Length: 332
Image (tube, rainbow, N blue to C red; front, side):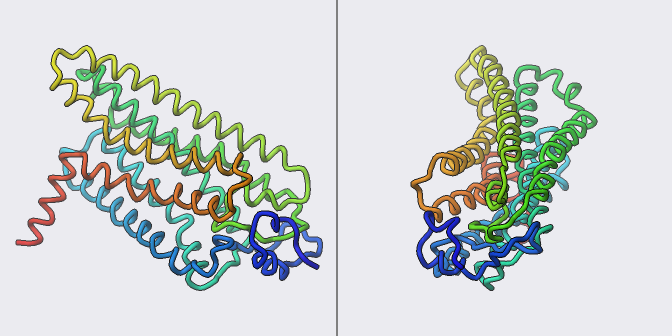
């Protein structure tokens, strides 16, 4: 018996490889099979090189950020605490998908336990939500620092920063919790093959042989609410920031003040633009090749964790100077 579920969207040789799937009825299979990047199996080893490079850069860069902020007393402030939260979040997010992805590319280790797949799905979406919340917290910090500079230290105390961080993590953890529970209850009686390199929510629930409207509607609602609210508050913060900047007396003062926001704006664009592109291609790119969908989804998950520490390391004077000091001392 041959599989037909995904054949219209992948090459013929992929349809052949899917024929080994267990096509008898089963509910909650013990394992799923991740195909990596369907259609580009022969290039998996070559594709793994840039992905592994991005992951290594992300690990190294984010650990450096955490180390420098920890040892430098002048960086012990709200902006850098939020930056440390972002670094930890990026480490978790990239590590959630990369080790398994590389095992597929290097060792053809495609099987993933059903529970492990749901766990990966949960961490993936949970910490994506947390990252969006951290961006909103960073926007709040920039708003207070620019619009209420004299009250910055009294408004954003260490206690308040910790509470904001916990609230962001709690929000992501609670809102994304229904994803794996809903996915677990669906009957999977057609195939256990996931045409993806990791257990993305929509890729998993599409395999169910029942009406998954509840999962789809909940996923869409949460994405719109979380991202929509975060983008709204970030936008409102920057409207107030720009008003305050334009009221400054000199051009140099305006440029210097806005310069403190450049890093934050860059990391937001680096994260939200690929995410939006990935979402649009997933929802409306039916004529786009499946391997292109998967590559975009991987880029969306790997590029921001790699670039965020680079952006802050290059743009933030204190971090840059401290990093240069470390290398200079080691070289002497």
